[in-house]
Length: 102
Image (cartoon, rainbow, N blue to C red; front, side, top):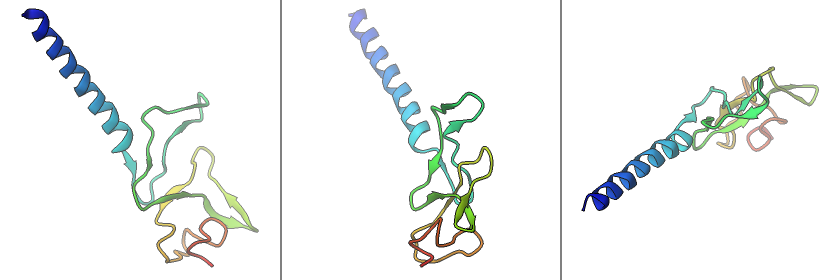
C-alpha cells in the first residue's frame, strides 16, 4: 500500500517539475523592444531557458546601413511586430523587415 502511495507522489512530483520546465521555456517570451537571449556569448552555448519573441513579434536586426543589417555585439536583435503591415521607420527598413517596408 505504501508503494502505491509513494509511486503516486513520485509521479505528481515529476509532473510538477515538467510543468515548471515547460512554462519556463514556452511562457518566458521577449516582449516588443526586448532582445531574445538564447545564446550565451561567453560560453558559446545556447541558453536552456532562453527567451523567444512573444507571439506576433519577430526578431529583427538593427536598421541597415548601405543594405547591411547591423547587429549590436552580444545582442541578436530585438523583438518587433514585423509583419503587421506598418513600417516603423525607427526600427524597420526594407532589409530587416521587407514585409512591412516595401
